[in-house]
Length: 253
Image 1: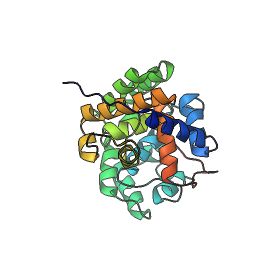
Image 2: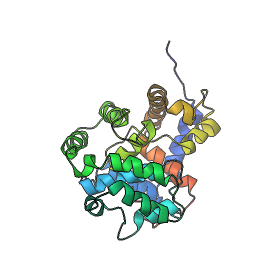
Image 3: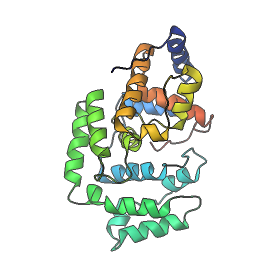
Image 4: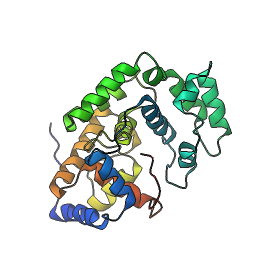
């Protein structure tokens, strides 16, 4: 069985208008600079660890510039910097204590357990393998390679906390993806409201990798017809969800 979603001329023109109206948006311009033009692309262990923590912290929490998550991640010095974590004899316990003291941060116990299990990917024996895969994608992109790496990151048992959505969020945060995007409630609500998307889409269905890939393919097809990268489409909807709050603010990701 094959399922195909057709978009009307109105749908395509609507996306084109979104693109036109967002030209002055700082958040969108930042996404274009990093993910489309591939500038400010940094693949150090420290940067990758920070992106990974961002993914864990933004699961079930908002990350706008006035959010507790943004304040925590942008603090200087950053209390969970990789160099600090590496010096701790019990890093999981340290992460848990820091999160417990941080205002408004939820799921602290879960996040500390997930992060503690995965430190070796950034500060240990597994970093070489991760760096190799990230650098390979950076040097030769394309949606097939983006999806392949997203699926590798999201395989159960490899990176705790990175499912279909957050594996793509991780890669997008690093500036490595143009086509594979983190599909969250902001996007699903807009697909239903603005495009009358005909299939059920929510956290339950999107937890399935194949269903997630299908929805991502539909969005990619819409963006291709509207001459916009999916990562930019995502940035527009994300920024609109926070009003004009991002103007003049470093988005961190």
